[in-house]
Image (tube, rainbow, N blue to C red):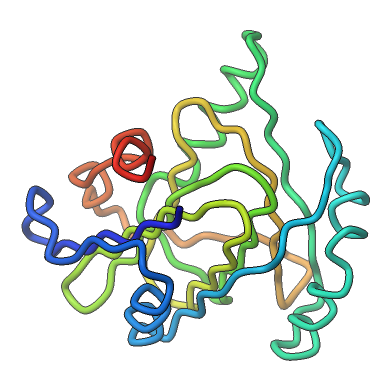
Length: 191
């Protein structure tokens, strides 16, 4: 189940809020101009192609595009495997997103399968949103944040963009991300 954990950005040891309540999560994130909602899950194959994912959620994607003006949508899939290639790919992908950054565009994600944690650093707080299947999260442009998919990622997500450049991050150089609970630590709380 989705979990929101909020800390003061100077005290990563003591959460000021931890909740699984959908309405509370939505309202707290709305205070940051972040959108949070859920979609009904659709059946996907064990290793779905981008085309399969986009076709399964075509109606939902079309609605988001109409409402928010996105022009590029893709699907990202990482399937857990016991291979050196998987471990190397997973480590590289995880490291790319673990450092605090921001974007000139909103960062919208739908989790069709698996989970990940978005950490929004705003208003002197860190808001960790442990997203589960069905969750849709929009991080507003210029919001400093980072993402952790865990040490053994296994997920399918849909991403939305306003231009053809796709994901472009502007890294802050801050080490704040290293101070807070990781995906693996929050997964034990979320279970």
